[in-house]
Each structure stands twice: as C-alpha cells, then as structure tokens.
Image: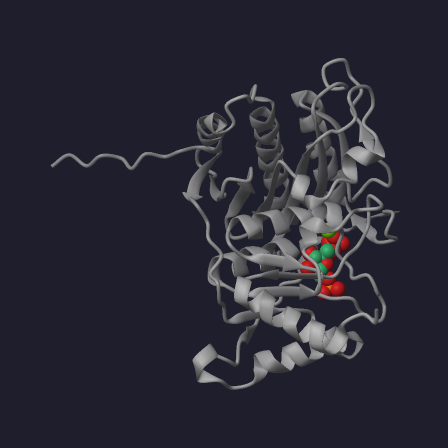
Amino acid sequence: MIKTLRSVRTLGQFIIERQADFPYAKGELSRLLRDIGIAAKIVNREVNKAGLMDILGDLGTSNIQGEDQKKLDVYANEQFISALQSGGECCAIASEENDDIVHIDNEVSKNAKYVVAIDPLDGSSNIDVNVSIGTVFSIYRRISLSGPATMNDFLQKGTDQVAAGYITYGSSTMLVYTTGKGVNGFTLDPSIGEFCLSHPDMMSPNDGKIYSINEGNYVHFPEGVKKYIKYCQVEDDASSRPYSSRYIGSLVSDFHRNLIKGGIYVYPSTYKSPKGKLRLLYECNPLAMIVEQSGGRATDGFMRILEIQPKSLHQRTPLFIGSLNMVNKAEEFMLKYSAPES
Ligand code: AHM
Ligand code: MG
C-alpha cells in the first residue's frame, strides 16, 4: 500500500488562504504577518545559539522602565523593526525597548495602513538560563489618515486590534496568532525552516488545574488575590483542587501552557507596583485578544483588558488571564475583597 504524506500547511500558505476571510483586503495584513514570521525565524536562530555566542549578558543600557536590557533583547528589537521596515506595510512601531514611537518614514512605508506594538523578547531574565522566552505583538489599523503615525494610532483599545500573536522560543518554537477569527498555532520545523500548522483552532479549556503567579510576592498582593490563592490550594474533589502551581516567569510560556492545558495566569497589582508590572499595549492586549478568541478571558481583576482605554505607550495593568471559569472565580474574589472604594 502506498502511504500518502500528510499535507503540511506552512504559515505563508495559511495566511494566504485566510485572506479570503477579508474579502476587501488587499493583502497588506497578510504581508505584515509574513514579515513578523520572517523576523521570528531570525530571532529564533539567535536565541538557539545564545549559549554559544558572546551575546549573553547585560548590554549595560536601560529601557524606559529602568530595567537592564540584555543583548538579545536589543537584537530581537532590531530584527523586528528591520523586517517591518523592509516589508512596507507598517508605518510605525511601539516597542518595549524604545521610549518613543519608532517611525518608518521611507517612501514605501510612511503611508502604510498599520501600526505594530511589540515586546520583541519578553522574559529576558530567563535568557541566560536556557528557559523559554517569547515575543508578543499587536497590530492596529492607524486612525490618522496619512503622514507620520500619531500617538492616537497606538492609544486604541484592545478591542480595535486587527491581529495579535506571540512566538514562544521553547523546546520547540511556535508562532500563535489571530486575526479575530479563531486562533491557530504553527510550530517551526527547523529542517525546512518553516512554521507549519500544528495547532489549528486552538481552544482554551473552560476549566483548568493550574494557577501561575509569583507567590514570592504574596505579602504584597491585594486581599482578593491572597484569598484566591488559598482557594486554589484547598482540597475539593469536585473542582479538582488543590490546583498545581506553575510559574516559569516568562509570560508567553506561562500563557501558552495554560492556553493548551487550562489554567490561570495572574500578575496583580503589588505594593511595589500598584499598577501591576505588565504592559497593556504589547503584553496584555495581544494575549487578551488571543485568549478571548479561544474562549477564555482576560481582566485586570475588575474590567475586561480589551476595554481599557490606553493613556500612554508603556502603561501597565494588573492581569488575570486564562480559562474562562478560573478567571471568573478570581474576579469574584477581587470583587468581594479588593473592590476599589467608589
Ligand atoms: P520583561 O518584559 O522585563 O521580560 O518582564 C515581563 C516578565 C513576564 O514575562 C513575566 O511573566 C514577569 O515579567 C515575571 O515577573 P516577576 O519576576 O516579577 O514574577
Ligand atoms: Mg516584556
């Protein structure tokens, strides 16, 4: 009997097929996603050989948050900016690594329709120790009509995202994205250098058994979070508690695991960071769009992440994200024990 090869769909093929979902589209968004996929492969190559090259360690500069940047962060930032620059479909970028908007003002790009918010390499404290890291990106249609992009082009609510995604550089490298019509995941096959569809129509389980939070900060957490953690640890057969605690310290990796297995990731406000640590535009909004598209939920403890009106590029927000029923339960605790006084 002749065995037929199972057909492989590459990211490039899939993006083109899906263009039909947007009958009036001219292919710009497809090309933009393709450009991000190309940069991801280049960054992946460097991440993989990070241990071999003199690319580890602090570069000695700080970003706007006052955090040390690693060399690989800078490299990833340059790669994504350069791919978007040469692709011609993006007129400006907001990056975790740049204080201000990066304008792409060459003739091809300056009137392009889209702006991109990106965290080029998240979880950078894990680079030196071989733990998986990720990229998170968000794409908006600009609202300014022409010329250089404006701050307002970036300060749109998460509900206005036209596409969002992440790349996780782990035991294998995956790119997961949505254009608002479901979530699909692609695994990089290093032998052919292509992202191949491996996780079609990803769905977040409604319930899960994993909670992910930096419990070392327990004393600084709001009462609602403390009570929710205790709830996760109580024995209860009906809800499969106690849950397992899993925390990698790389948002993308923690999120990705919970998306597949079912779970909740929480980075709440703390005494040290009253607004939380994570950034709304290029960390929380893209993952919130993905989780909602897969049937899960993302809130700041009280309000849907995608409905927060951003006021600045590097704005932070608390984040409760993951399986629908788990986020609902955590929110119940927040409302009961930590609701802001009105
Ligand atoms: P970064 O953008 O500086 O890498 O910080 C974001 C990271 C997330 O990936 C991770 O979930 C979180 O910070 C971990 O923070 P903490 O060490 O406070 O638990
Ligand atoms: Mg980050």
